[in-house]
Length: 233
Image (cartoon, rainbow, N blue to C red):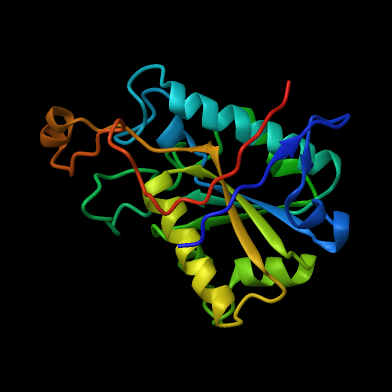
């Protein structure tokens, strides 16, 4: 899979996206931010089966970086597409235990991002499957993500969220395939900011107790993740 780096440098907002000559329209390229499943059920302590059971540095850092980027994009009115994992109780998602059930609160933004619901440049899509691209399909055959890309003229998507090796990876892989087959014009590049991503921790003994598949956070995740590197105050 494609591997590239994009540097972040400081300006008055602490952010300049230098890939392809600029960000959010700079250098002729429009950059859109995609937030993947930054919801209570994956990020808020004790919120559910796949939520952290205590303070988690990796998840906390992911949330902090995602909030920072969201504030920059909203200040500049650059497009944001937010995917929220949302499931119905009668539609299980094996091998994972029940999580992010609609109406439970697990399926909502973490508190630090709830303000995005009021922002005019933010499109929110609830999905009931791992892959956010597939989860953006509508009953009429259209795709909410592809429509967002086209409507905003997005050339580059910057992806952050959780889980690096599951929902983020699946969304990025499918989006790259869609780009390669001309399904998401004018999209050219997909970049994942590694510091803005995290995965969950489900140790073996906990997984056995709830009949789920173990997923220790310390094991290296996808080697195919695209990388961004950043510096800011």
